[in-house]
Length: 552
Image (cartoon, rainbow, N blue to C red; front, side, top):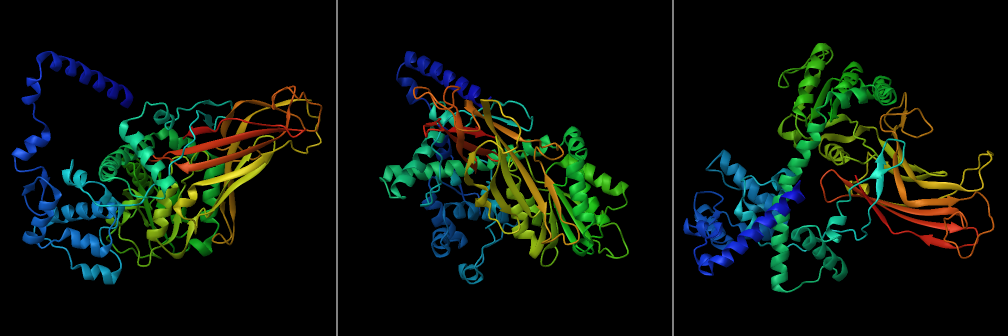
């Protein structure tokens, strides 16, 4: 849809350009831009504290320093704020002034002593004022560069259907094929320059262009993230999805056993349920003896459902401000409509944090939907030190001709950056004792995951939730990544044709070497997966295929 709109706009611009050329050059003299209109009205940049407007950020911040005693440049310098820190500061100030026109910032020295600032929350990356021109004109140097991938190749992936893969549109290939916007292509260029030159400086024009690019990305990202989040939470408003998850016996019973069968963990505990859906995990926690359960979800519809479910079960605490007699009342569940990252604005966090954080965050290929980022945020901000996170381990494995372990995660300690990883492995035939045909065709790699409720927290009854193809099927199934072309394989050495390509019937492979990288994509809540494949024959010949990129 976005591409079609862009194409339509481009066509309209070409028509307008042709018409204006026919009218002659005098037509351009009569045309005024929005910027000109803003300048005529006194400038397009609105003061942070009053209704004054300015043509540039310099006069605006000078005005703020002299008239409102807010020295922006001094604050930035003394607190060492980077570009995004400046964005947060501006949005923070605008939000506070909107609440109280007489609001003023504490002295900088206070924040230097305390070592933190009140605008550090990522919610202040979202523009407080829609189309805030100041954010677009801000010129603060920021040398941080972001890593960018370079391999572009269409891949095929199929999440959880157990069959051959369907084509998956690769969002990255658009830039390489010349179909991406100028801004996207420019961003790739900036990343490439920064990576190759170690962040060395360029010309003044280049630096200004880079700064404008970062401003544009910061402004657009907030709107894009909100749109993606709205679509994501909206997709979980369907009862069909929740019926499928609740009907997944392996999934539901794993969480039930972890919560109900570990009394030393749950008795009297305060529990945070991130992404509660229908609220089934919160009900388990309440039944297990939790003293307080806070269930949060980004879908307003599911919050309504979870609230009603808790009420129907006699577990709803419909007044969060009311003190609950912990050992005399079963009404311990409260349900809140919010994202995990904004929880502290909606809910009173227990002193020291929650005792237990539980969440069913796993997607296809474990990391699809990128909900893990929200869970880790909740862990770092709302879970008490040493508190339990359920599940507390996760692993990704693959199966083609054999099983191979790829990556493990310790959810109690891992950092968000660990979601990006690369794993290498070799695929051979299993030693099964079963007769194998002379040549077998290998079509791709299958990824699956396990999550563990280990005895670190679940001392009475540890639980493993597996989506392995060798275990009872779950609604996740497995995720298939198909090779560029099928690869012929044999179990043992055989005569091969020296003129034939490796992986063909005349020169089958005895081993496939593969390297898979999984990284969070530039598009919010998406992941990019690259797969490198090399087939090796019994006489040592090798054939490597182009890197494939899959976008989930």
